[in-house]
Image (cartoon, rainbow, N blue to C red):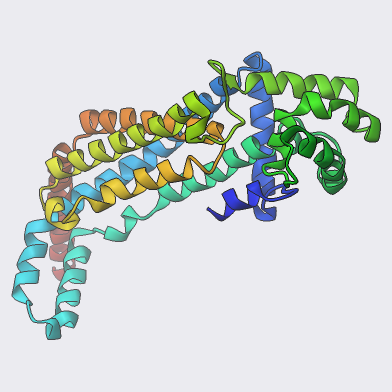
Length: 334
């Protein structure tokens, strides 16, 4: 949220700690745009697919850990019934640790790895969406002259809007109104805004139009068809959460008790719906693609690597491992 607010603020070029990530993603995006003929949104889709493929082994590992936890649920519940009194919390924790040690299981392995990776990826995506002039087109010295550029285009922007207002989403605003700013920018910054650079900006700007929708715009209910982006964002996010919940409940009945209410399932989709009205439509488009690919990935994992099959495999592996330990103990005893 802070990143979004920063991006909308006056003369923002991103968060310093993420700028190397913006630069790296910008190079990748520029490469894709070159080979795809400036198909901006196809490049975003490819970015997302590659990310999900990278995350697949991590998700499979998480599922294996979930399968272990589900297999141990009867034993865990037995220990919990043994120590119902809160005063025996230390004994309960000790027996739980002993159980995990015997079974070679670490529930903390489930972790937040995929979520953190997605958040880092989102920061990179936000960088190339909000700061394309700096990191995708790589205009020389743009960041160093941001304030001077802002001062030049502000009066023009206020003349367009008829309001004494500041500019939000600085670099996107330049893209959106480049035809109005072009002459002033070329006159005041001839070394930066050359004819070739201006052509690049115009071509990039044209690529951010999807089926007639200006994806540099921030959706608003008054803007008509552009609100389809937040709506699709909500629907796909709800679908992803619903499928994920149903798969967990089907393969791990104990999850029904752990979840309690459906609040968490709905909280994140509606939060993303709210945020999609605070960011440009291009970010919402990325979320839609990411949600759709997440649904397909969840269905693939559930079909190809069902937890019940994983539990059976783990049971065999644990039996073999236990027998091996017993044999080693017997050898040592002799």
